[in-house]
Image 1: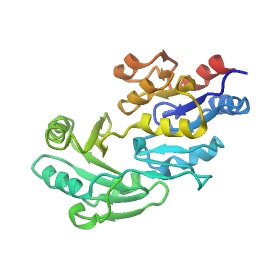
Image 2: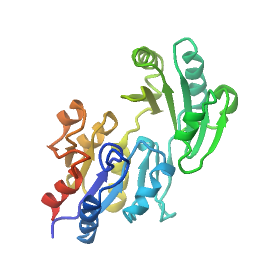
Image 3: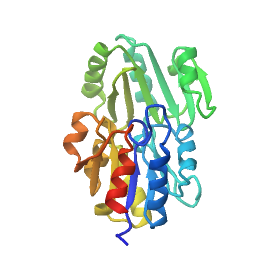
Length: 268
């Protein structure tokens, strides 16, 4: 058989179709790839509570990367050293204070699987309720007592770049930030130096798989480092141009079984 590979899968826009399901075809190919001895893992910006169902659906037995590398653990093997790299609490409170000098809708902090929302918002609470986390609403400067794993700022599109410029000017040495596109314009922050590639490397080292035998799939800004790091970085057809520009290969879209078609051709 081919050398043992590690296949790193982003979720939204990559493994998941637009209705947030995994196609039966792609699921079948992933099972066949695993039967051949290859390892499959999830590497996502999502918290564990909203990625756990896909982990079990694919019957994985590998560590998982959440929050873009800020939280890495093995759901089935507690001897694997859990790695949690939160942001500095005082820096986060300073960022929250600064946001009040700009236009923003809301700020969400997550401590692993606990959710803190600056302004009470039923719609946001519904969105973040997947996995039934403990949720707290109220001024983060008062209610947030632990260093958060990630921080999200929801703002209008025209204000996102203004806020990001301030973050780069003032906090570039302690946080990394990215932005999401429509339908929600969101700035996503984690501790400086963290990304999906950091997490995938830790998992590859744990499994004893060399970098050239890593295949990574992605579509968005937060997948760039992972695709650059992998031996084979694969962009989805629906990926943003920046992701396509760093990828070794481009496959079909998330709606067209892009992962399944690529793995079938490449490994089977």
